[in-house]
Length: 202
Image 1 (cartoon, helix red, strand yellow):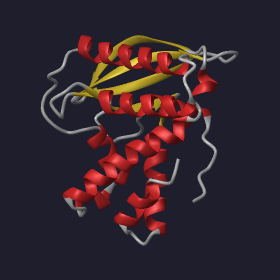
Image 2 (spheres, helix red, strand yellow; image 1 turned 30 degrees about the vertical axis):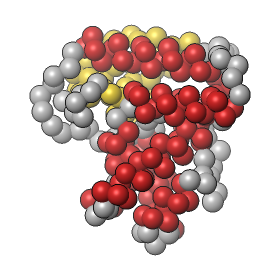
Image 3 (cartoon, one colour; image 1 turned 90 degrees about the horizontal axis):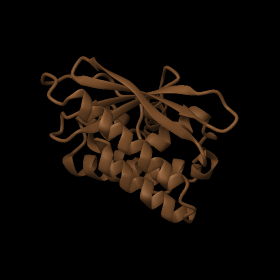
């Protein structure tokens, strides 16, 4: 299936392993600013470690998928990427889609890791946004001006995880959600076909 060449913003979103989710409803803010900021500091440190590790592409992709599973609320991200069809999907389909989507992102963006060797990032602040913490950070790539990356962090699932990322003011997983929607439409709304094809994409 045709997949457009990722832009810088899309690539960075992949490194963060997340994308544009709507604001999450739910309980009052339980996690603290310190917890949210610490999570993002750890994510960025681990991403940089992968990028600069010198490991093979396959090993880097595997490590990236592990990072995504460890620090992102993958179930919420995948459900949001699937959109309204998630409401009619079976539990088995949602589980299979979540795993396929996780692996798809790891392959799609993991192959771009070496382009970010030497990049630096740091947390610059955090603020409450409804039931989330929005953690601001600055990323600097070689020969490019610094730009802002904002992360949405939640404990809705019972653990502190990131659920969204915004780069230069753009909700990047909105692009993934649109792409998944287009892929599903091309398959006549067949979620099982989408899951199967995601296993080959990226």
